[in-house]
Amino acid sequence: MSTPSWFHNVILNTDNYKHCHYAIYPEGTEYVSSYIESRGGAFPATLFVGLQAYLREYLMTPVSLEHIDEAEAHCREIGMPFNRENWMGVLNDHGGYLPVEIEAVPEGTVVPTGNVLVQLINTDPKYWWATSFFETALLRAVWYPTTIGTISWMSKEIIKQAFAQTSDHPEIVRHILHDYGARGVSSQESAALGGLAHLVNFNQSDTVPGVVASKRYYNHVTPALSGPNSEHASFTAWGPENEAAVMRHMIDMYRDYGVVILLTDSYDHENAVKNIIGKELKETIEAGPGLIGVRPDSGDPVQVTAETTEWLMEAFGYSVNSKGYKVLPDFIRTVQGDGVTMYSLRDIYIEMERRGLAADNAVFGMGSGLLQQCNRDTLNFGQKANAAKVNGSWVDIFKKPTGAAFKASKRGRLALKAENGSYVTVPKDSIAPEENLLQPVFRNGKLLKKWDFSELIERSEQPVPESYYAEIVQPMIEAFQTQTAQSA
Image (cartoon, rainbow, N blue to C red; front, side):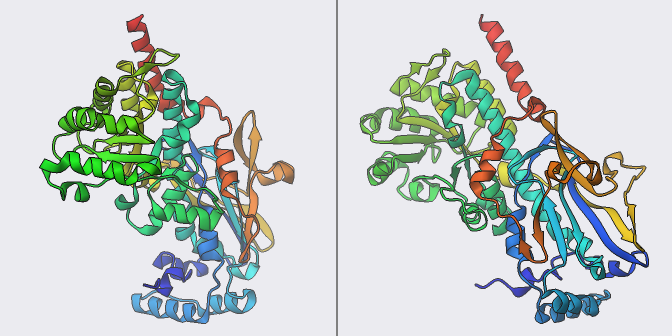
């Protein structure tokens, strides 16, 4: 089914009331600047990602006469003024491309909240209103993938901390968290944007739109790994009496792929792990080749992950690593994909450490906890006007509401500067242009900078101050320290 044209009509990809704003600006307005930032919230820093996908999908498609007619009909229907002259000017003066310039921090950069991430301005004084007109779509294109990228990045910091405490293999961290979120999001586009944001931090995903988007918009060459996994429909179709048979069948069918993941909660999870996997299929599993993942899909994720790991150790044994923690044989792991959020992941590692289990005994899938359990207020994203040129003179624009101090906006044209190992937002004219980390990425329908996905990954993995993630991992560190002291 082809996409309805109005999804790519920039004149309709906005709020209805935006159509009346052009006439409200002061007479003599020539240029309007605005910016996007996270004003704080759940996390102290953000991983910026997703803007390039929006620019390539939407702003590089010109407005057509058909788009203008379609938008005018819509505005008439809802009782909203429509300035046809404005849009005919965009069509005739600029070939249908919005006359705006957008600059942004390089994607993949981890930036403390409260800093400018994106700044834009119109390039033709006849179209001062254009900067704010597409705020709805632009802000949505930034806040959602950046929030998902941040959740994924913070989860990675939790995993890194657990591995530093209990594992000998920090090199596998990018393979520990799998994206299971496609079915839990509100749209295919959400799956695409959230899915590609997760891939900045990890190499594992079952979210096809995210994999496709990372390749289409960022030239991701090796976007994700997956492998044969089971589902309840195919397992339960064999009936309870054949649970062992279907597991054996799946192992025989897919063992050459290097990994097979078996569901164990179709009926009785403990029986499936202890008796079917640990006894009936034990020799088959040990014979290899490849990895067998044992996946409970219900129950308390904290307890069931640790219990499953210990039951597997009873059946298959374990070794003790250099840090004194138990590790399953390489051919078998627990796969926990139900009820996993950033916070339950942290609790799982606390419980595993308490039981003397290394972090690398388990891999995880995260669904709605990764791609859906957030909103614009998670990181308090906003786009606000910060400067205007009126009758030849620049004036600062800002808001400072008495009822919500966090909504106070920045005034004047902005720049992002590296300072003391972090970043700070400063007036644009206070530093040399080469010090400004905001880079022009779009102007008048043209993409000025194309980021490769490998660049996003490289930036995301640069060292950052501990303050960016300390409050997220601190409860786990404190638990580890308490348990170490108690066992001493």
